[in-house]
Image (cartoon, rainbow, N blue to C red; front, side, top):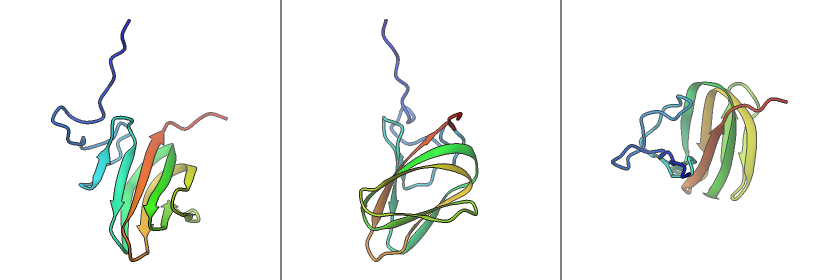
Amino acid sequence: MSKKSKSCTEGNGKPRGKAKNGLPVCDRLVENPECKWRLALAPKETIMVAGNAPLLQMVIQNVGPAVIEVTVEDREPVILMTGKLSVMLAYGRITIENSEDMPGIAEMEFLPRSKS
């Protein structure tokens, strides 16, 4: 039996308006076939990824070259150097900040919260 793979984009190759979990998509967010999201950050830019996300797990990696800061709701920010990865519980407001003078790229994947 063959499995049908679901594409993360519409038939025309453009990203959908919302991810499977309902998070909005901004115009610089590109979803690839592995369902990971890449976000390009301009120098000195802060982007709100979600305003009211449900409780989920977020895997985020700094692809580089700038150092990025990830803030979830009212928790302490997580600083990611180039190449570093973090798995965290995410909910509510999620922002990613690039405070350097060079552009940066963050790669994200949103997963259902695991039961422990």
